Amino acid sequence: MLTKELVDALNVQIQKEFASAYLYLSMSSYCEAQNLPGFAKWLRIQWQEETEHAMKLHDYLQARGGRALLHGIEKPPAEFKSAFDVFQEVLKHEQGVTASIHGLYELAVKSKDYATQVELQWFVREQVEEEKNATEIVELMKRVGDSPAMLLMVDRQLGARARG
Image 1 (tube, one colour):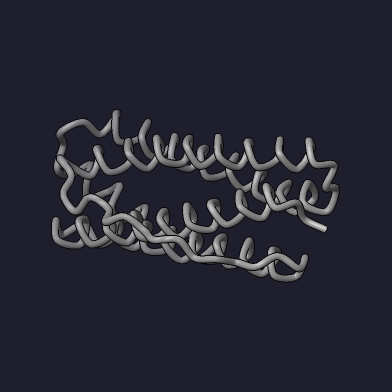
Image 2: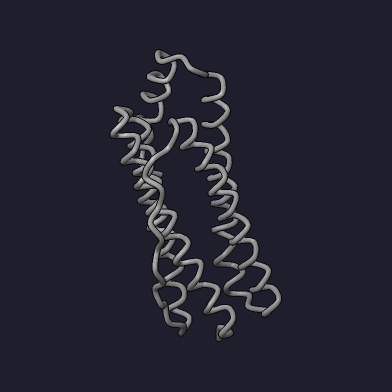
C-alpha cells in the first residue's frame, strides 16, 4: 500500500508532467510563429511524451489504490528570445524534472515501497535520455550561432524526429 506521503508526491509529479507538456506546447507555438516548423514539431512530440508520462504516473497511482488528484497548472511563458533560448530552457527544465524524479525515488526507498521504486526506474532512465537530447540540441545550436542557413538546417533535422 502506498503511503500518504508517496501518494501526495506522485500527485505533485503528475502535475509537473502536465505542466511540462503545457510548457512544450507553448514553446512549439512560439517556434511555429517564428516559421521554424521543425523546432515546433520536435517540441510538439515532446508535449505528447510529457502527457504520456503524466498518464503513466496517474495510472500507476490508481492501480496501487491511490487516487490521482489533479492540481492546477500555471500559464507557461509564451515568448522567448530565440530558438536557442527555447532549448536552453528545455535543458534547464529537464534538469529540474530529473531532480524531482530523483526525490520521488528517494521517497520510495525511504518508504520501502519496492513496486514504486521499480516504476520510477523507468522515469530515471527516461530522464537520462531527455537531458541527453536537450544537451545535444543546445550544443548544436551553439555551433550554429547566428547563421540563418544553419538554423534552417537544424530546423529540418529536428523536423525529422519521429515519435519515440
